[in-house]
Image 1 (tube, one colour):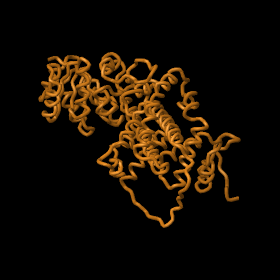
Image 2: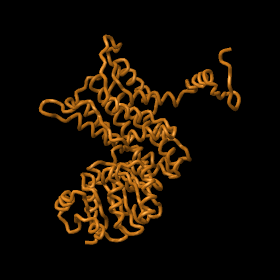
Image 3: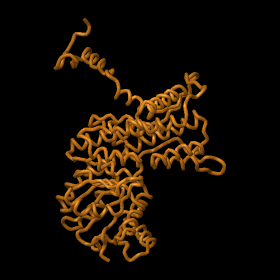
Image 4: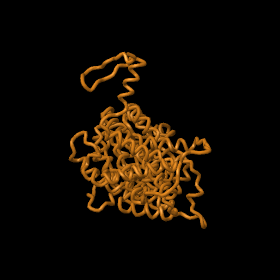
Length: 466
């Protein structure tokens, strides 16, 4: 067999992506460090066009030149596995890291593999989990533009998702994000956005159940309805979580309140700080998980929280949630632009949003409209400036709902770091004068750091004690 594509790493994602390629008519060669996994995948498919190879040399020899090899391995073995494969490849073959690697490492690897082996090294982000890998994920590509458009994108387009939105075009959910580590950068921000949205959803679950008194199944119905309306995969996901029973009990009520993390959300927050971009909602999601692992429960005699009548409806919670979701996407777009500008990626936000419309974990119907908006918007346009966003998600009613949600949480003593970050972000955006003027004054007073004025240019210093 002369295979169209090779995949290394037969974990759940790798196996499913390999099967996806085979289903779309490609002949596939697979390899795994533990050969039994590759054999099991080949036996499951049971086709002469899907074969497993134990030896790296045999695996590479089975590929039709110019070769394309996708790595789906753990981040800590990308270099060792990649070098073992690249040593058998020919000049201008393509080697792809499709795991969650930090984009800066992908930059280094691109140069290393090009200089040492003469191969094109790509970093691509794949979102959609095991099911997405099998049925069609969202794909974010970073690497050499000419080779990407000529050879790689036509291959990957066959296996990625189509948007499931009425009236959407048939462009598949794949984006060329720029050179070098751009694909992994966009996937990193995607994962950070996911952290923020998931924390908002989790807090909404607590509100619906603890404050509004809904059962888990009733809360699941609320999310299922909203998910169907908004095309939000994560809403449907949490609806299933809320409805799952174990005997007579809700399984979620037996789950520990500890949410661990693999690091991509933390990378997003760190990169945002390094680039001077506020991503407070994403940060709230990251820190909530961190706190859950290092929790110190303190019992206070009187914590000041109150009970009483709840002036809040299910629709208010969903309105507040969607406002938070939209603003999480705004912060994500801001960070992509900042990193792209510094790295020279020229990442097209319309292309990114096109990829995120379907297949991925954070897919939402409104991303299709946003992609259209960005294709015609002026340079530097903000997501929240899109007329349909303001009319639908950031209107007076939804902001009032947001304030009621946060107010109730504060009143009841319900921790809501993400919703609190959302309402704070709204107020920071809309206020005429920030409190930071006082910080300028204090810094100049204790350290002569100077300050800027609104009535004259330049920097100034004052003797504040007089």
